[in-house]
Image (cartoon, rainbow, N blue to C red; front, side):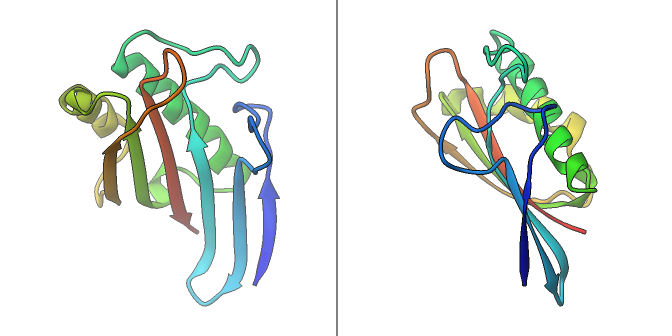
Length: 130
């Protein structure tokens, strides 16, 4: 199986020694795309976008979409989602925004409460198949 790094300036660059995403090709299931935890950051300024869970979730999905597009995929190809919320009490509002971006058949999902950086309410990582 071959691994290829995904890198795009249309989403925030990694804040540490990791990739925005990795494409694994050559397997029997097609290409697997692993996207790192993605934050609600502006790709240019690296500042948090939005002060509500809805606004931040919208930005996270923009960033995820850009990374997936660089790998030749889209949100329609996502099969697994992991969501980190700074306050699990935001789940209802988060779900409202989530449903605008992820459609049937919906991917499997895990949602957990997490401590994140200042002002960050949501982080999402995904696995997609093409």
